[in-house]
Length: 343
Ligand code: ADP
Ligand code: MG
Image (tube, rainbow, N blue to C red; front, side, top):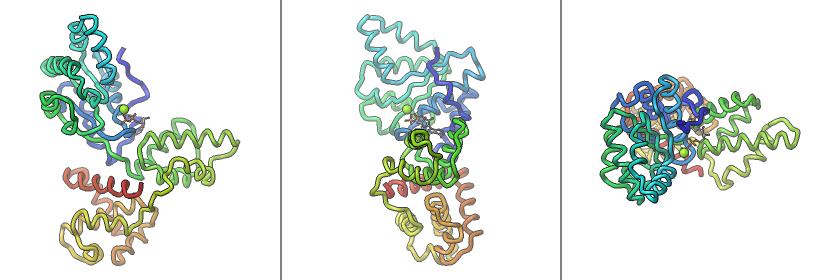
């Protein structure tokens, strides 16, 4: 038994800027387990952002394409407990041998290995054996591998052999898509304005987004009332931090200027300098995804540009994020800053 949850598939995992690299790397790995340089594949990121889902999707996809492959999903916590049981009974070799027979090993939440020295020794032996035999390892962690305090350096250095990819906070559009997919799957309908309201206000993580949807459903059936904006506002009160500051075009402009060390008035002028053009485009893109302002209003905030300039800017940013990693990192970092500022 592979211990996989069959609902966690690639189809049900919405791709957004926040997880594109991780999702695509996961796809590549599922098509050729052990046969790419993404070994191990380390997926890291905060709570509720899809690490477990994505890791399991890889396992499920491998099984779909190659049913005979031995895939195993295990949390690091469970691995440690199993290890302790086996060492009590003096059958550690059985334990290690069992794991060495696996083709695709998924270990979830490896931060739990911290300071579990003996378990790390066993995992080290298993890792080496699997890696040398061309088997695939997929690991998830709540922080980047380099920040895993209490994990042996020899393990960390092996993690660097492969690819580490993060899953971040989804932007507004991605949150909308996730909500719409979940609603479709549950045969649930609600007005677009409500979906937007939920997507706009729940920015913390995907699990919370799901939680909000469930609460909405529960309240609507309890009150025998259709889900409308009024109900949504009431239900979301318990989710949204009341102190939350509103994100405005101005606040985003300020953040981007600070980030790139660009003067505010440069953002509004017609300067064609590349750095400034890019900062301006990113600001428009963020304003589009984080505020409810119209394209026209956004344009007006940049020295009276028109809405087609805003559309063009957003498209340029999306294209560049696909092709330029350092650009992408900057945008993601800014997205996180904007989100944090609103909490
Ligand atoms: P983590 O392991 O990072 O804490 P999970 O993988 O458990 O997060 O995800 C939390 C919930 O959010 C799960 O129900 C998962 O299906 C859902 N989820 C996360 N990311 C996405 C996504 N990109 N598309 C669809 N559902 C997602
Ligand atoms: Mg998880």
